[in-house]
Image (cartoon, rainbow, N blue to C red; front, side):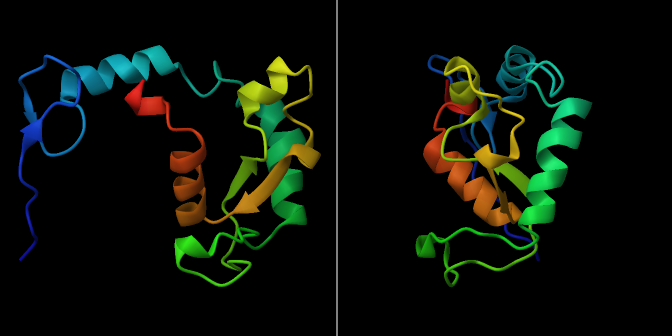
Length: 127
């Protein structure tokens, strides 16, 4: 039998809606609209060809060394994500650097990418 999460109040200040986690459906939709599409955020075919593919070819296994993620150093799981590191895509563009240059990336597995992004970019859903 699956465990059910207790409902909590939406994390948006003043919203009384109950939700299983985080924001209610209305506020999730608003946040997603503000975020823009992947293409609007710069993840287009140029990104795929010039950044993602070369990073994953160079790093076929996860290069994460953060042992707090519960793995050895490096992780070694198959890479699924080309992660901008140590600067994120926005910071690279603001510094006048090419965010599609593979030198600014590393290959990470899904769990390490999620943990790193949550720690290093605490904005996102919580803005």
